Length: 462
Image (cartoon, rainbow, N blue to C red; front, side, top):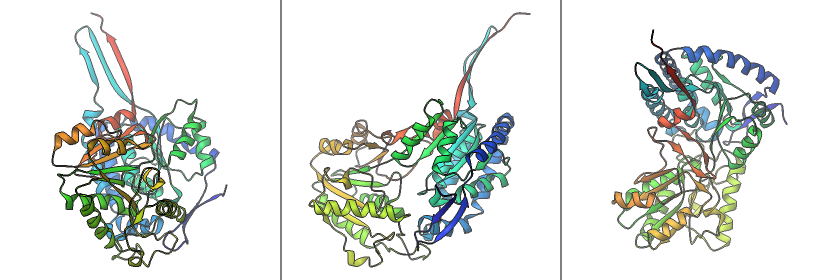
């Protein structure tokens, strides 16, 4: 394994950033300091921890001018979209606002004879293994509540977004969080697995591939370390006959193609009532055809390159296999001369697809979406559940009772009605099946980042 981590820019294939790999022994020594510092951090009043964490978020916002083009260089998101700090601020502020309630003791009895209660105790060191597609947003889901709850945080970021962990640690330390309470580690896979197997962490949150999640589970086997795993997704949208068609097209197609389709809860397959199908496809093709593929540093670009050539190759493979097996590509390649066969990949809509095709089964994580007509709710439900993943499902109807009844039967973590590709910090972000386990944000997020500790105090009379 190389002793250097290199971020290869999808813009031009150049090395944008590199950092030396930290040896596992060096990282273990650093983590010993973190473990010692965590106790003092947890002993601070909750209000003080909240203030320092929010100060760290404020410091992060001051980096916007540098972070936005940096993200374009590292993973290809167009600068016109301005980064991720709007969502970071929303999630951080919400988790700060509910901390008192979420971490409050559960009192069973407070009488002259007994005091019985359950308190929330921080785990200790929370290890955040963060992905490249939304490198700040996904990391902040765990960082903010973990620190507020009294944990220390160690972060290892994806090599594709190599500089993000460094910036996050610098921002929170500048905001007043002690430097041994939030640390960034430049680790390779081998060093990461070695530290996990040694029980260096008390809780691990990983967002990434199913393969990566399995590697972490294997490394943690026998350590009894708590795990939160958000893995793959193949999120469906279902458009019913009474849906607002224009609204459904705009939101679902944005959910499918924004960030070059590289969204955890992006829409990857769409089922449309047969009566609306032709109109939906026509409008969806018009939406995709208006996108501007190009250099993400150009303000006119609305669709940047995929983060890595191999990601684009997988999407091309799924698309070409589907066309070979009878699918029809609806977006004209002549509209996207910038598609270079490398990281720059045009958007595509496929009709004539079925669930024997990988593009309707496997995670694509790119700017392609298959659209199928359905007869009724029963067929749509069968198809939505015919998947190894379960992160979100998006239902489009004016009938909330119908959506709720259908949602109760969908194997998923979140059910949306007339919305898609959004994370509500008041709700638990979770999944089922091969999407993983655990849950972030909301009060449940605090519960997962702490452990219950019970007190049964019997009082004696003087």
